[in-house]
Image (cartoon, rainbow, N blue to C red; front, side, top):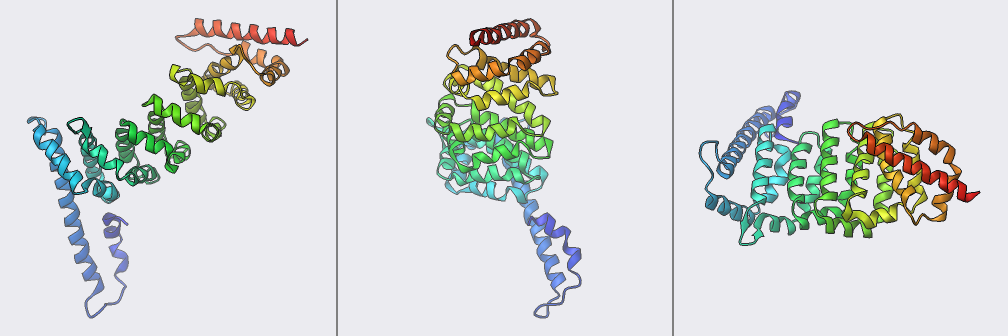
Length: 337
């Protein structure tokens, strides 16, 4: 329980009896006053640290001092204290601490980042930051700190392969829009920052990942559906993800999801799903079961495609692609007769 919450509830303990002859209420009030003062001192020190690391707007930071501070912080294990005690700080203290964290991680000794190395040896800090998305008070601060960590391949790789990664599939559907959006940004960074690590991860965790992602695509939450299909339409079409895309478009279960999204009431969702659907159809090496689904549903599909709205800025290209996909489906139907 944070010091602030504890202090705010002191008024509820006035009815308690004394212990060892000392009024319990007075004892707790003295303790709370001490903790308040200690916390205030901590937050002042964090603010001073922030000014030392980034300057005060008038005086630039001394880079030699900044590097020395980073080395001492790692040596004394202060990074762990930063993370573990983040929930106990007030709003300004958390903001200052997150700012300091980002600067510290960038400090290099020769060719290595000393604070990144510290986190590599204390990966439980990454798990802690991910779990903190469940805490409304610190979620956004932890999101900033996580995205700074994700800039480094070793830390991003750990999060991808940890049990904590699956929590993001829950976080992007949190009822708090700001936190859900922040979690989605972190999720996107994890899947786009380091191409080799992501490719390796998806190849080895293909079934698990896309089964979880399917839940986002079919979510009852409109924002979740829209953001997940938009990201997937961009992600699969990136050149580094070609192998993943080739595997994805061979599966009927994912074709069925895209066909379902083509019926969505949202224009944006229909357009994004079309950009994935078209790859299933345009694939020159379509499996027989994919062809069969397209033929069996050709009437409804052609109707949906003809009704597909054009997207601003790409109307002409979208119309051309739609016409090509319509022709390909009609060709499949003719060949099946």
